[in-house]
Image 1: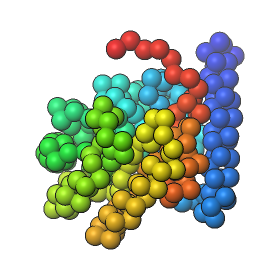
Image 2: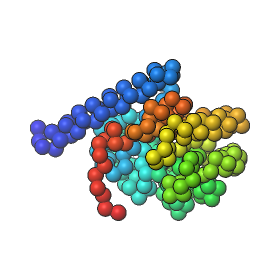
Image 3: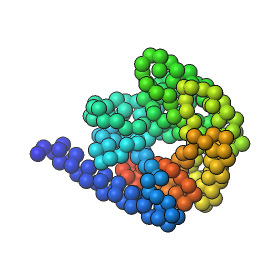
Image 4: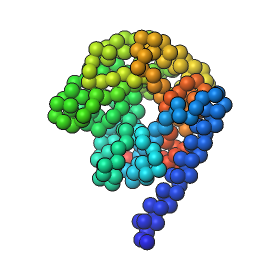
Length: 249
């Protein structure tokens, strides 16, 4: 066995152990509030980590992988496909997205969780339509509305009051499908308050758009709180993959 194979086996064992711990946390959090673990999906946030880690996570049964930066994600998705040809995972874009990146994202993303403006909605609609016509994708794009819960513009997200307007806009489109809401808990504040607010926003959205059932909330440090308030998807990076390596920008 060469050194590369040894490193691969070691990394796989690390990821398997971390994945088991994360799933135990999800199971325990669900048990504490009387929910089934089947109600909570897991997205592995692979930003700054190599495609080889994404491939190993897929081997371990992780079917949803998330990225924050389009310019990092695009080559990583291509490399993943080379490493695991024929293996189907769903790629999520969870970072802030500029409109000029919509065309690229439409070629590789299955889900965009960071939609927060009408202009971005329109850019994605056009990009997905073009990608469908060109045979670069075979299905509409699933999207989540990112809600800003602390009014810090540097973190992205629309105000809670904008959610109905953006939902109505998307309801008239066939290229994109509204699936729910996403949010990040404000730094330094009680996540229970933030996730309770998001739960209320989601409940009101579902009254008019029953298909918008997903609530993407909770990360490594606060997934228990998010699950207690109805999260249907947690986005976990550090607890799965370890501390993030320094990368040049």
